[in-house]
Image 1: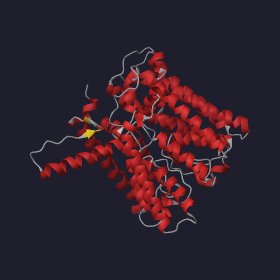
Image 2: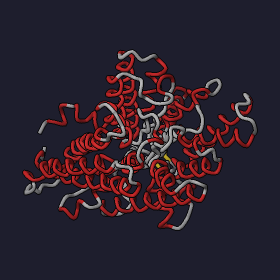
Image 3: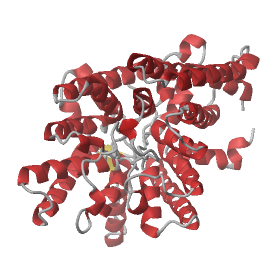
Length: 483
């Protein structure tokens, strides 16, 4: 383990992140909202921390190995989340306890979208902007941004990329060099954000709201500058724009890159995960629409379809935007939408959940076992598209699913021990582990009323969800620490 090399990189990354505290200070200056002091103080402290971590190890130049990448990734997300706490905790306009500030910071950075704040629209513009920016930075992963510049510092980035990019196909690179891969990811990410912001503005949002909501939409985060979320705008057009960009952001960014460079939409048509994802979304929208229509949840068919489409896509892609209280919808719909968030989006997208490709492979593996029961001598394979997958990939997916379920059960039992009821505990773990945000029961609106112990457990769930379980669990194995 190259601890000094890890601390050298960690210090540099903290310094890079500290620069992201300056834009909210500029927003505070522009609006004259008085919130700039907290951000400048946080910037000064974080740059000092980064320097103190980097300086003693500045002369260490060793290549990072895979183990180092895992440790650095977990350390950086944890430290970065704690650095992100400072402006929220220092702000006089936002009287949060330390626990609440930690919860809000990690919720933003992991793109979970759960909040403990009430009266969001009354906050200074700088604090509203900062919450949205946190989600945008966490969406694609601040580390993927960092590896684009690390080669200039003489540090290889592949180990960080492998630990950060979600999905079972982590070694798939769009370009031969990892720095170029990270840059292309961010080019697409920034382009989608800009397009989304312009669309929101043309649909009636102010530029501040348009940019803020574009940040959380492309990050599939769910934070809003209003307590009522997207419901504040009461616009079918804005809802539709949000749905379109949520779907785009939930598709594998490598597929976007292939479509752009190949100047053809066939990349989407040929990809089995994208087809499965869109099929799931369409089925979910139609089921929710039919149910709310039969139960006359809305005054007219057009409104019913728009609301059903928005909530189905928002919850199932793990964004968590709201236009209405979906927890009060009839029959099975609230639980259906929460369960849909377990599937989430595609691998290498900004969405959370298990990822569509894993769910598809679990289903096909299950079908293979059923076929084997009927024909024990038969030879059956698991395919993704036209490609036969090796047993190691299928085993890894089953292992991930087992680990995911174990983490879910352990954290849920912990929440029950803090006094939460069954529905609240179940939905809170689902919402935070899947990086969804809103839940059911006591956490349908926000998480302000649950015990502090429960909030700390949910912060852990957010990290497990954002780093896809194995990245953290591997640190708990004795094998990892053996030289």
